[in-house]
Length: 102
Image (cartoon, rainbow, N blue to C red; front, side, top):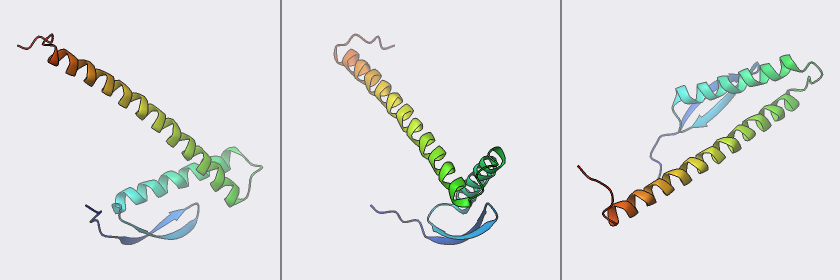
């Protein structure tokens, strides 16, 4: 089945500029993401006085978020492998009737 959420238009402000956004996400989620991007851009700008270009700041923030996403995916994959290993072990134990059931 397809996504049945309705697309909504909203405005968000990031790094001093307003953007019109169309999204199926909840408005509060979109606003939270925009705040996170705004805060990250301000931190980069405040910590590096050499970079003045908004584009350069945005690229650095995008690289940071992409790196976080990659690390999160790696951690999720590891957790899923552990869950699968544990599930398989429990399934074998139940099939072998070696798991004590009370």
